[in-house]
Amino acid sequence: MKQAELYELAFRAWGAARQVATAIEEMAELIQLLARIRRYGSEGDWDPERIAEEIADVEIMTGQLRHCLAGVTEKRIQRWKRHKKRRLWKRLKAAPITTFSYVYCVKHKIPMEPSDTPEGRLVCPACLEEQNARIPTD
Ligand SMILES: [Mg+2]
Ligand SMILES: [Zn+2]
Image (cartoon, rainbow, N blue to C red; front, side, top):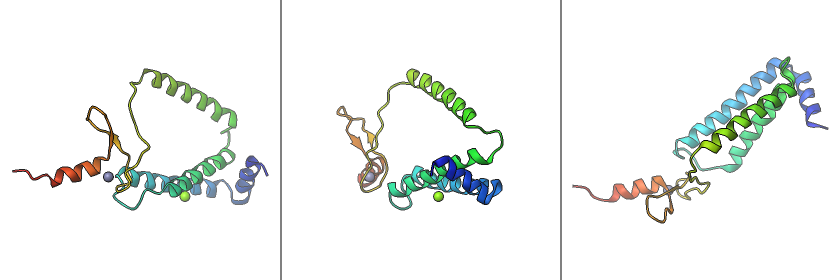
């Protein structure tokens, strides 16, 4: 079964109101998860499986919204995506090159950042903070 058929079927089985409600719920779940991640792993562990699951939920629901909302055609969505991607590309060309990392601290499960040292080696900001707290001040 093609994806479009599956989504169409879900819409016909449960109706637009229910699909819109579920989309809201799934998006809220991803928002909550991202908010926790942003708070630098203060709650729970870095869980790529969980993040992937929530992203999948939202993608499935936005896929279904295409079939629930009158006049929201694939053509319109694709036109907007082209426009936004072009704009993103223009902004990227003008943006300064920054270093960012997908390397996470094993202890804190947060992204490592380049340090101020000449080698610019990656350090965990939370580990650094802990280290600094241990240094006695007078
Ligand atoms: Mg979910
Ligand atoms: Zn750390």
